[in-house]
Length: 560
Image 1 (cartoon, rainbow, N blue to C red):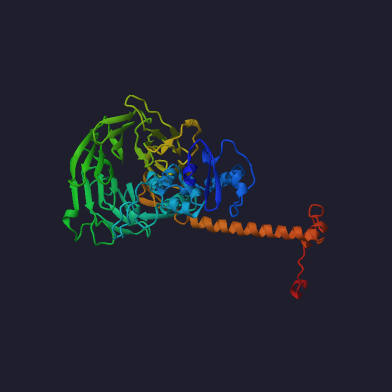
Image 2 (image 1 turned 90 degrees about the vertical axis):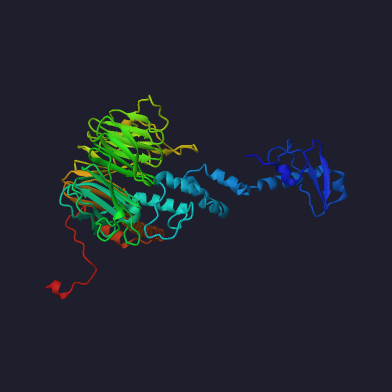
């Protein structure tokens, strides 16, 4: 970016040189080019501005060096922060999080601009979406603000730091209460709640921190196959073809009272419309999405609780995943992308797996889709900018399981899967999801050879049962299976443990360096270490019968 330094100095832009005398200082002005540099630069002696003489007036060309040096110094002293704050923010918006963090360390002004920059909100929402306010927060949020009154940079750094905890140590909590298979689990991190359901027809609500059962519903007389919730609504679905709903109740320590005793009857209701078992559910702020074995996906308006759209499929619907104004679904071995506004099918991925495509997951980053199937494979599809007649091929494939992949869950940068082989796989997607220099789409999927995909970074073993559902969030992974137990892997202390271990390693390294330095100083002064002398005298390799004695005096008991 070029700056007009002539305007900054108040110079005229005439072609001829002119001599200006103001307040006893003589300045020789000449035509300037970029940043005050003359077309013909002459290195002359410096003029003393405090003593202007007639001799200098008689030959003004002596002062060319002084005026040019001053003008150049004035232009060179201009820096990036001299620009208007709005323009600086526009430049900072082109940086990624790492670069923005580096810029914030340059100066106090840039630290203020970079820390308060709205780019941090964009970075956060691209990865994890808008944060849900905690249930205990009774203060109204400021538009564009954060739930905990923290800066967006602080939220981003904390969440990015926490994402590394899944490679650390963990503890396993087992929640027991179901008498039969647990078919579905849901983790509501903003409320510290876990919801579970299964073949025993009962919904159970657990405290995530304490691992205690808070409440349970009456029997719904069907196998519960799907649960979805936010801070205002809890929905469940099962083999009886209806959707059972609970509205949040104010004034309680927990948002939902699913037992129904002593509460308003209007807070519990059902939605009818499907003609077969409800297999999957999802929520956004305006709609409820449900899929069924009646080969339809239905969209329900949350304000009126009515079905407003229905998408027909060619096979049983296994799972749904909304994102913005689109909703993805799997039916049979195919995956579909539907436009909610127009109600039309925008793209289809045929034969994504050998057998049924049981599971589906989407990200906040871009139009990235993950599918898991009966063949034990997990596939990644990039569906951005794809035409209707284009055959979409997987961008990456993993085969971490020996049985069908029943469930997928994603929280940047981790993709978690469960299978009938009783294992949980964690895949880090940082390398595949790379930034893109576009203001409309910040992320893309890197074009790489599918055969060169790294294996899962971690596998959780030790289960002799089939696993049906998984959820991830708040430094925890929740899983349910056929043994009726709900397992919770707690990684919340992994970073603290790693910090303590790193501190101990640093102390040992410092002590090691201190001993090495002392040894070097002793050798430089001509003194030898006593241990080194003893080792030279008693070579274990040369004499196997050598015995090392302590310098302590042997007491009478030992002598006798």
